[in-house]
Image 1 (cartoon, rainbow, N blue to C red):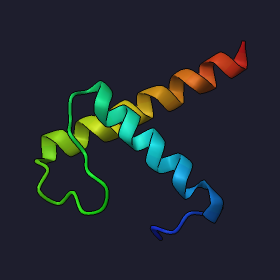
Image 2: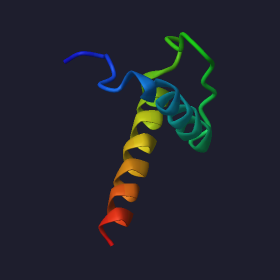
Image 3: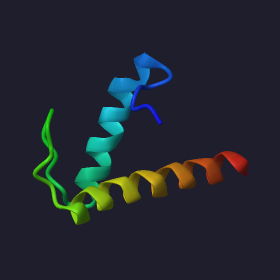
Length: 62
């Protein structure tokens, strides 16, 4: 699977979304490289992003 966005213009929006999710779970992300994060921290950010996407989808279904 490719790491390229299907819609290149979405990159900034995805970065804001990621930063917001990280802030909500207490992970301090910085711009650029974040390879020093633990697996737990990275998983928390990804999990929060998925949770928010599911909530958004559920709201759109109502």
